[in-house]
Length: 344
Image (cartoon, rainbow, N blue to C red; front, top):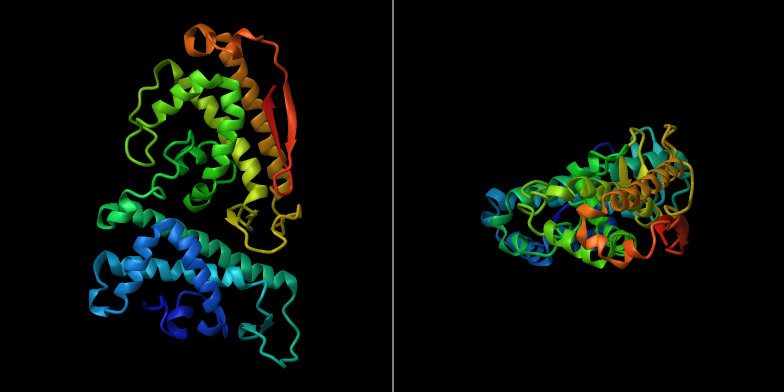
C-alpha cells in the first residue's frame, strides 16, 4: 500500500513558513493520524481504498484527487501538532527547525513553540472541517462512508449540527470538534435529560430526532407542542456538553477566540489561555456551568408548568413524585473532574 506522502517537498508544501521538518521524522505521527483521526472521519475502508489508488497515479482523479489533497493537508498539520512535544524545536531567523543529535543551539522559547504549535493545531482543525464537509457533499461517491456510523455519529443527539451549536455558543467550535463531542452529548443526555424528562418522554423525543431530514439537518420535523421544550433541551446539552468537552477533549482557545483540539501533553491542566483574550478557558468553563444551570432550571420549570401539554411527563414518576426537586451541583470524577448540574 502506498504512503500518503512520497517525499519531503510534498509534505512541507502544506505547511507554511521555513523549517526542516522531514518525512522521516514525522512518519510515526503520520501513521498514527491516518489510523485514528482520518480513519475515524472517512472510515477505514475509504482510507485503505484511497491509499491503494496512490499505487496507480492515473487512477487518482476527480473526487479521489480532491480527497487525497484534503487528507494530505489535514495529516501534515495534525502530524506536526501531535509531534511538537517530541521534537526539539528551535527558532532562528530562517524559521523553525528541529535540532539534530549533537546540535548545541538552544530550543525556541516555550511561547514561540506554543505559537507555532497553535497555528498547526488550528490549521489542522480547519483542514479536518473541510475534509468532513467534502465527504458529506460527496457521500454517494464513497459508498462505505455514505452508510457508515461515522457519518451518522451525531444524528441521534439533540445537538447534531454546527448551526445548532453556533446559535448557542459564544465560542464556535467546528464540525470536527462537534463530532468528537458525540460521546459527551451521549453522557449528558442519558445521565441528566433522562432523569429530568423520565424515560417515556425522553424516548419519545429521541424517536422524533430520528425523523430529521438527512444526516445533519435540523429541519423537516414538526415538533409541535414539544418545540419550546426541544429548544430548552438543546441549551442544556450544548452548555453541559461544552463544559465537559473542554476538560475531556483538551479544548483550547486561540488568539481569535477560536476553539481547537489540543495535543499538548499538559493540555488538561487548568491553565490560563495564552491568548490574552477575555475568554480564557477557566472563564469559558464557568460560563457554560452557569448557563447550563440556568437552562436546566428553566427546563424543569417548563415541564412542571406545562405538564398537561406533555402527558408522557405528567403521568410519569418524575412529575408525580413531587415538584420541589432541588437543583444541585454534582462533581463527577471524569479524568480531571468536570462539574455538572442535574436534578435529584
